[in-house]
Image (cartoon, rainbow, N blue to C red; front, side):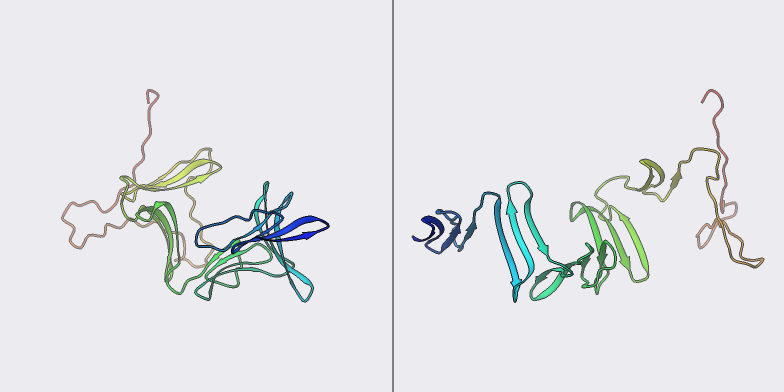
Length: 219
């Protein structure tokens, strides 16, 4: 080993191809050259440009790993010499963009997509397809009776089941369904259309229904 001392205290050790700062026993990993930084609170790397503090990386036993760009600088993540992710100074995260303008901004030359699930074949997705936004529940049809729910203040208010039935739950005396139009003109009032999309309906086929259901005092 090659050992370095200051004030009769060992400060750095080179053991084979591994370097230890603050330790006489740098960590060793097969096939790797290792740098071990040991301190009473942890280890820290500072980066400067012409004496100006620009970034730091640190690790300690309480907070874990820290990565910081100083001032108005940003943090970039690259693969194959191409930037993939950027974290801006004001905390906005951009994927596929170097100019994120929201807490999370995702851009892609193809249709961007967000997936949430157990694995690639059992998930839910939010996708942008040209001019349309899709919320896609269980696109691989791995679960029976999948659906999409909307909660407000912790209570489900709207649910769309796998057959396309929309169930809305409300409370109070306000309007359960309110359609409002601010456009002027006699033909611009809100419309409700019931359309049976059948190329050849038979005589007597229903084209739409509006039902009113209630329970009596016995349920």
